[in-house]
Length: 386
Length: 232
Ligand SMILES: Nc1ncnc2c1ncn2[C@@H]1O[C@H](COP(=O)(O)OP(=O)(O)OP(=O)(O)O)[C@@H](O)[C@H]1O
Ligand SMILES: [Mg+2]
Image (cartoon, rainbow over all chains, first blue to last red; front, side):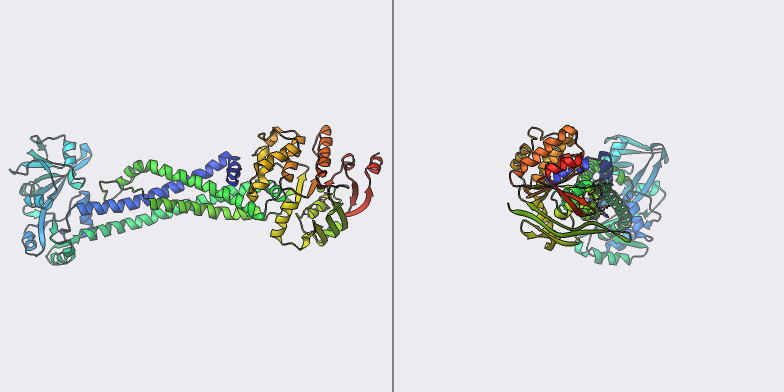
């Protein structure tokens, strides 16, 4: 028999108590592991998405640029508009490869419980998003419409179908459908810019301009020049990401403090369980001492019991987190300001190690006191009959 | 016969509130290899205290204790733990087996702590005490006599020179007592020295010497023959 086997047998003595303690560790570790994984995955997915946009600078109307940017990415309605004339000023700036204006408008569809986002664009968008693959063709007439991949799925529309907008009593012909890009673009309804301006009553107005520069290293310098244009607020995708992450940061701190409390509680639970079992076995421990066990042997035994408890609980917690990662991800995505399309939970071996270290920490810490208590109990006192 | 244990003016006082309990007073004792000494006396006379002292479970208030040529009163705690493990075996009235593990594991436990795995030795000792074939049983499946045999096997696993038995037959059925005492006698053939503390004069009779304690002092010595008369 190994000492570890003996430790496990001792734990098995009180099944209910051991299982309850295990559960608290399982829960704490599962939450910790999920959060860590989520956090990393989210950053990675966000970075990916911004890179994929192929857009280095976003110009929006003056106001809170971050808020607007969030709205754009999330697909909300922009509170203010830019005049088309800014495009001429923008085109004068050196180093810009392409600047694509668009007018965004959301049509709320309460019966369907969704908002359809219409984006007025022109050929410049096609140049900017040179990775777009359109099944069908680009606009030829002003009542043509192109559907994003998901929008087409929702509308069950094919090229050649018609889409009727009852709000405006207007019918569009579907001339193209975007192949899936894995970005927000998939969800939009694209119509010619001029049509959109007329239809939504925003003549000569746009909501935002997406810009690609020739050399990404120059993005900041060019953004500075753009900033000088009246009424224009500018931010680079790098900035955007930083802001998103710092917004996430405060939420993160809150969540991690909750997890920390959970961990403290489960540590106390472990400590309590082991301490109780030490008290119950006072006499058993005395007899082990009398039959040849040294203080350090008793210490090792009790410590091992605590470590086994936390290791088993922790491993189960990680396994549960791994199995549940998919479900947890769908839940979390609903609450995020920006939910990237890809997986936001990354299962990183580093996180695994971190969690294991945490579990070990619980075990080591919670085991110290009971083990000390047991080791230093006077065997003669414990063996005296009352 | 060679001396295995020598106690000189051994004292153990306990403090109980303001008064001092003199549980052991200037006790002299010599134990030889292969010898059984019985300690008798009323409850509270100091029998257990004496066993704890000579078993190095507790340090004397004063006096000297020499075991196998080593002055154990001079040893540090760690050395004492080590010394005890290799020289002393303990058994008790209530057996004190670990209920969750089987016979074999109970006997093996002292080795487990010291990481000296030796399955062969465990089986040999179990055979010696008459438990061959019962290795896989749990303590609660055994009779009192067999439980005490397990405790004896556990005490013997580290090859002690001295076995200390505190009321070893106190909880046994009448017919179980003699076989255990016979086992003790058999063990002395290998040179093991045994001290048995007991109330039971019928069992005390197995001792070559029988010392009577009162208030922590030896007040009389009996022989196996005279003790029988004392009973009547
Ligand atoms: N740890 C202790 N603290 C205080 N007093 C103690 C302690 N241990 C023993 N005593 C006292 O020392 C005296 C001797 O006790 P001991 O247990 O040695 O007697 P005993 O002969 O073994 O009795 P019994 O036959 O009941 O087992 C008693 O008066 C007892 O109350
Ligand atoms: Mg006693």
